[in-house]
Length: 293
Ligand code: FE
Image (cartoon, rainbow, N blue to C red; front, side, top):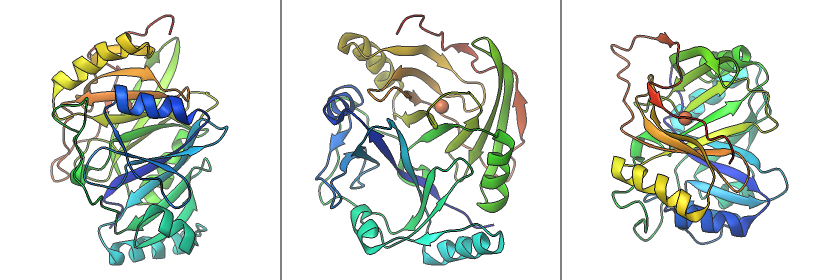
């Protein structure tokens, strides 16, 4: 089943743009691009014109996810599948397409109302990217910008939607106790990145639990962990390694209140021999919750 090729970009609605600009550049080593036609502030992490778009607003949550298709034909095939599944979608307006700088776009909602953009033909920046903070750069390319974990009302319904309607592929599950309660998390992939989207029902007020960016070098993760403490960015979970995606990472709190994860050494999935498993722990080691942020 042809599906999205990568999580190409995501939009965040944030109430404090100034704090986000400083956080994104000084801590995460992202670069600020030229403002888009709709006023969004683009954050770069590679050759693309943006991987994150910041929109000023009160929600402090994810505004949209942009799933990139390899070409017009695969996007067209996905559109047909949405139609036959009875999923409503709209074609992106000229203004929306211009703001994202893509060739074509359709817009739908996932089961939790997360605005989901399917597009092809991404915007590429005219000048190269270099990070002032992440010396070895970010791992993106065909694996996309990273991953998100969505806090959803009905994890099974979300899993079915992304697998059966959108054609994502199952990576694995984690079923465990975490921070005093049961946790059932579902991990889905669209390319060799272990997961581009995960979901769990965490009972939070935001749809976005965290977004993960992957550095090419573990040293950049360690250095950023300590830089966060120097900058006063709250740590949520200390350094640790997840058993399923094998990522060594830490979690901190963004200026919007949802979390970020910065990792390295994530494993890749080869669909020809992948075995779906259920893990009984969130971490192999570390990822210790920090009591007071
Ligand atoms: Fe994660």
